[in-house]
Image (cartoon, rainbow, N blue to C red):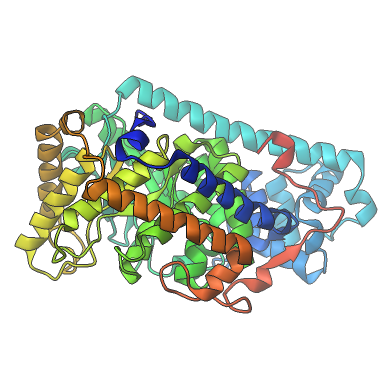
Length: 522
């Protein structure tokens, strides 16, 4: 993990420690008010994630995933409120067959559902616990394998250089990824196919077609993980694999990521609501279980506050980013995720035409590092003000690279000089990585050599954003997070209570609901 930044930065910037504590307290109040509602509910994706956690995979004719077919049949039977774990475990206990075989029979109507009484028998709960223990063992084995690989190969010092691949074809993605590793990349993010977050299923196979990216599937995870393991051995350093656990299948993708040794997942508590118009409670319930799985698998989550600055003004709305980071932190803590796994999002997006734009950027980047000293912040490059002028674009990326080093960021997503023109070519990534590595080397000890003048521009700006953040969190605490989302507090996008995709996939748990994750400490 990256070294933690000490709280001395708070003192250096002259930040009010008590104000930071009040912000954190307000965020915990905001999240705590929602937790009873979240814990009282489950979703279709959580139930499918239970089956994937137990090792169920494969699909039916027509490409329907087996886990979808089982959960849909349970819904048709009117028994979804009790969850999928108890009835499936009861059938495994009764038949002595594997969970995969039982699910295949359920999906084809070859096996009727057990009675409620059978679901409540001790043998059912014992079987469910055993299936969950095996699922936990698979995740723990993946964590151990990842740790062993890191120890054997070693890893780059932060900031980790992070690039994306997005061809739509997993085998072409491998070519792009391996070339990026040879050019110096430390993290490879496989961008998902456009709108996969709105699909209420996860494809079951490797995919070679996708628009704007490649589908997130268990098979694709396994293929890319193997390729990066090989690239890491040749490069002599561990390479991190990144994908997306957002949208309507957040918990399922987290299970698959845990099983296939992914290192990071883009996983935000509110992104799906704000940017994909997914039902609010569907997102909030799913992110809670998804993050429980990430905590168990030691997967770093990346949150999406950087996206706010693509639709809201980065100067005027800076406090909404920090407020969201406090809220994302609180949701993550509720799920058992430690700060060292919270890749909170931030971006270098102030209009470069603004006088002192770099100072504005440094102030907010330092503020985030000071407030969340143990979190490996995901620092995003400029995109909003790139026009296709590759020379200015490259100059802007160089400023971003310098700011990243000067503020001791941990996860550095490399900017591309051809942003706003096309998906990066191999040479685009090479230039980006080469420049980032040069600036990291040229200014490696810069932070140790500079201090910030008390009452200066940077310290005043940081203090002002923090004060506005406290005011906003006070307001949200009074009205509630759901009201804030309806008002468009974040990213200037309003999401009313009665809207959003996936509402039909949320349900209140019955008294007989069996939590397949709780028994193994997830």
